[in-house]
Image 1: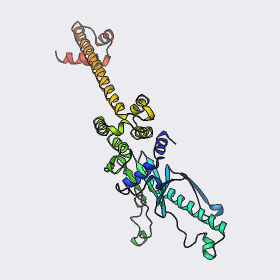
Image 2 (image 1 turned 135 degrees about the horizontal axis):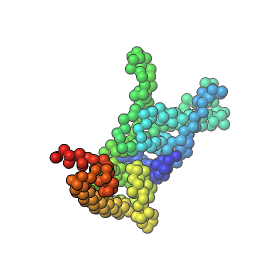
Image 3 (image 1 turned 90 degrees about the vertical axis):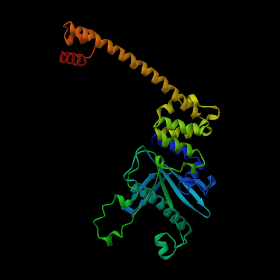
Image 4 (image 1 turned 30 degrees about the vertical axis):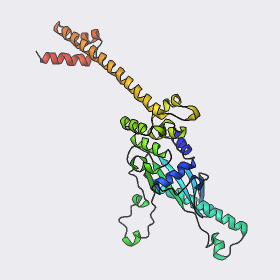
Length: 328
C-alpha cells in the first residue's frame, strides 16, 4: 500500500467526512447521513465461489468501507481511490461488491446452521425466503490530472454489438460511480474540510488560482487538520507543501496552510530574482565572448583555437565564424 493510499484512508477514518461525502455527492448537499450513521467495517473481504474442489477463493481489500444506517436498514458503502484511469474498473468493483454480497450470504448460512431452523429448499440453499442482503455501493474517487475516460459500466468493456438483439437483452450490465474531484462543480455541498481539499486539488498546478482560493478561505486554511493537509499533498503531488509542513505546524498540531502558501510564493519570487540575475550574468558573459571571438576571427585565429582560449563551445564558435564568413 502506497503513501497516497495511507493518507486517503487515514483522512476518511473521520466519520464526519464519510457522512459529508455521501451528503455532498449522493444527496446534493442535503444533510441525510450523520456521523452517528457511519459505522466501522473490516476493509478486508473474502469470498468463496463454486463448489468444493473447484471452489475459487477471492480476497479483496477495499480502500475504505463503512456501514451506513438509513432508518431500519443499512447500506455497505466502499470507497476506491484512483490517481490514474483504470480501464477495468467496472469488473474490479463488480468483483469487490460480489465478494461483499457473498460474505453476507455465508454469514446468513452460518446463522441458520447454528439455529437449525431451515427445511426443504430453504435448507438446501441455506437462505430463507424472508432473508435479505444489504445493498453494496462503491464510489471511485478519482483525483488524477487527466479527465476520467475509462469505462464506467460493464457494457463499455464488452464486445457485444454484433450479437443478435434478442441475445443482447440477456446480458447484465454493471455501472460504477466515479467522483472526479477536478470536475466536481458542487464543492459548496460539503460541510467539512472536504470542500477545501477538493477546491485546492481542482486548482492545483495554477499558482494564482491556488493562492486565490486559499486566501478566500483563509479561516479554514489557517488551521487545517494535519490529515487534510497530508491528503492535499497526496492528491496534488506537491513536494513543496510536504517540505514546509513542519515549519508551519502550529499549537495543537494544526497546519497554517495560508502561511505555507505565502512562504512558497516568497521563495518563488526570490528564486525568480536569483534566476534573472544568473541569466543576466550569463548573457553578459556570452556577449563578451562573442566580441572577443570576433576580434580573434579578424586577427586570423582558427575557430578551434578561439573556442579553446575562450573556453566556449566549439560548435558555438564555429557557428559564429560561419556567420562572419558569410557576411564578408
